[in-house]
Image (cartoon, rainbow, N blue to C red):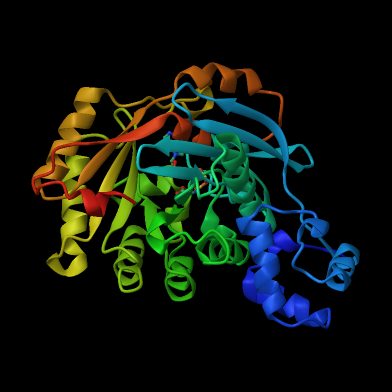
Length: 382
Ligand code: SAH
Ligand code: SF4
């Protein structure tokens, strides 16, 4: 049986090397060749003994994802569509900023949660990505961009698991991929710069805290159970009190001292003054009186089947002000890179499953509302 070495974090690679009758430290060399240098041919790995390279050729391979397309916005935002077989595709987006480069990564083809406002949710669930398919998105993007810019140092400084899929419903495959991202012999990303975004799989939030604590973003979208049950159906299983308690527990392990709540602004649905006030109540009832969360308001990206509309800017501003006045740091994502929108539109129908979530991510950047407390640049930069 041959294996895809991208599926392994370093410890499993060491076990694999031992199985070949090799010393464990060979795994570190191999891991560095694959992830730091972007090598996929064993003959490139010149400091490995020829005998090991021959064994590897028989037993293993490094399998990247096939690229269906690449679109580049004038602001440098780059979006890849990767073929994952059986008519499924996932998207990965690179968002360059002056002080960081963020990669938005997919964890599943489709999604089983079925949020009302999400086009991935409307498509349904196809399958979990393998760890190797998750890390292959970073492997490819990092080495492609390095080659393109002629740089030898790291290009991608941040990863957000905000592409297609619910990462905490693909936990077993997510963890090795996160470990490879964090590994100093891999991508060496800081825990603060790797964010898992979840719609609220409560038991897995606890497990993530124990196994691999990274920055956490929770997709809230509603301030009470009756509305959240409708928008994020997973809420029926894990209601808000449970979710908020899990978030507060996560803070004991988290690399940062706050959780980010994402809140998609839907006109007339969840964007009213009373909803903002409910949020303030919910936040203040948890966290023991400390400042423990931030809000990121996302203007809804409409799609026909949703029957929903984006909140107007004035409504969003009123909503944000209520949160800010209560001392909650609140940011708003603004669209950017509109010129790749057309290109995205051209892709529609070419491939069965594709996400508009990532497409939306590609067009967004974050701007701040004026919080009551002075904005601390250090804590905000993920
Ligand atoms: N499944 C995970 C991560 C992927 S979705 C999660 O739900 O957190 C990434 C973010 O995009 C989530 O906050 C999600 O709620 C939001 N989102 C999905 N569809 C959207 C849309 N049409 N407009 C704006 N935000 C959307
Ligand atoms: Fe799945 Fe996240 Fe979309 Fe909800 S918002 S359907 S959890 S990808």
